[in-house]
Length: 174
Image 1 (cartoon, rainbow, N blue to C red):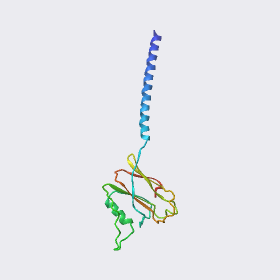
Image 2 (cartoon, helix red, strand yellow; image 1 turned 180 degrees about the vertical axis):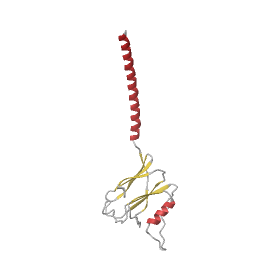
Image 3 (cartoon, rainbow, N blue to C red; image 1 turned 120 degrees about the vertical axis):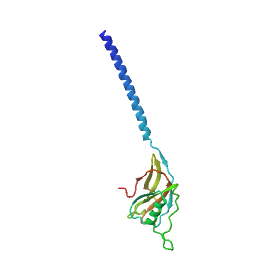
Image 4 (cartoon, rainbow, N blue to C red; image 1 turned 60 degrees about the vertical axis):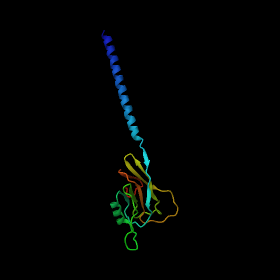
């Protein structure tokens, strides 16, 4: 009789441990599906437009700027634009519709020129999850070029209320 009771208890223990194992495996499978979903990061390309050709800028430090309103744009322009009209006033900046657009500026500062150091520029801008990613990198050889003393790139993108991250060969990034 004792042998029958022990046998029944072993069967119940085996069934219980088997049930627990199935539950644990199902939990692990569900968690791995969730984490693999997060691993497949989707990026969406964002169109951008150069809004100012190389010109008379005097930005001697390297770095980046994000300009989201007219006041910031006018302040930046007054600080760094170097071209004056016949009356001695600075020429006005390009018009930007800040209700729908924002400006991204990448500047390489002094000691860099596109002719002797290779040419870096914004290669692409993409939305990745909840941020805007600006990828800066070297362009292919474009042949002869004009030497810019303070190279700069100014682009217009859709106004998005997202943090902006710069990756790649970002000037001023150590």
